[in-house]
Each structure stands twice: as C-alpha cells, then as structure tokens.
Image (tube, rainbow, N blue to C red; front, side, top):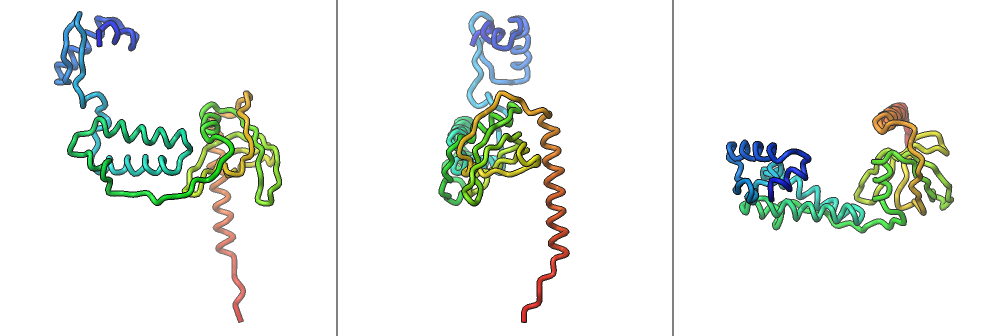
Length: 223
C-alpha cells in the first residue's frame, strides 16, 4: 500500500505516514517497503489483539458457536465469519482449537419468528420507538408502542425488554409472539443509558418482591 493511500485513508499527511512507519519499523513491526514504492505489513501482525491464549481462544470459539447455532440469521452468519477470521490469523499450533474444539453446543430447534431480530437490534442502537403487534398467552393480539432496552438470547428463543407505552411499565416480549413490527421515526425521549438504568432498577424491585413473597409463603401441611 502506498503512503499516499495510507494518508488518504487516515486523513493525515504523507510526512506523518513516513514518520510513523519509520517509528513502527524501529519497534520491530514487520513492515517492508520504502517511500515512493509502498509498504507491506507481513502476515500475522495485522490484528495484534487477537493473539489469544488457548483459554481465550476456547472461550471465543464456544461463544461464536453458541451464537451461530442460536442467533438469528444475521448474527449466526457474523459468528461464522468471526470464527473464519480468527482461524485465518492464529498460529498453526492453535488451529486445533477451532478445527477440533474441546467444547460443544447442545443442538436446539430454532424458534419461528415473523419479525427480524436485526431490526429490533437496530432500534436499540438508534434509540427509536417500535410499533408491535403482539400475541399474548391466550392468543389475543394488541398493538404496542415500545421503547426497546435490550434483546436477550436464550436457548429457547429471544426476548425483548422494553418500556411499554400501553402499560406504562417495563415489559418483556417474546420475539416468537411478535406478529408484526415497524421501526418508527420517533426517537425515544430518554438517553439510552438512563432508560437502561431505570429498567435495571425496576427489575431489582421486581426481584425483591418475589424474594419477600417466597420468604413469607407458608405451604399448608399435608394430611
């Protein structure tokens, strides 16, 4: 790659590129080339943070395989791509951690979803409201406007934590019961961090109520 291309990509001057490459070579970074010709970074040094230990590699492989088997198509594909990228840069001595992993994932039957979870994740990142057609346990369908907080992944499917305008409270929505959804242009009137903080506080209070109820419950003695 030429210094001119590097400077254009990083929005700096060529003089800065020459200076920084000289400094990197002085630190024994495997760069070959010269001004006016171009530079090559040798294979194996392009992603230093992924120089993983054996345990770190096992953890990354296990997590990626879990997502590949349980995530929606977009995340499953991303997980497989992640494994391929890690495989391409790790030393040959560690390839067995990916080709013959020491961990495994229990197979599951994918839940049927009518709405893309990718859209729900986009709504969370963008801080936008979502309109849902949601089916409850009895099959009744209601129209909800929600402020999505996070999307939880489980073996049996996914669940959306959100503020529900209809109920004026935080609620959980199973994604396999969402019949239809639309990403609205209207933004959530709270910063993401504040909304998530309120959700955590509400969940803490809910757990406290369950604990108190469990502690005070006295089952009737059986005759």
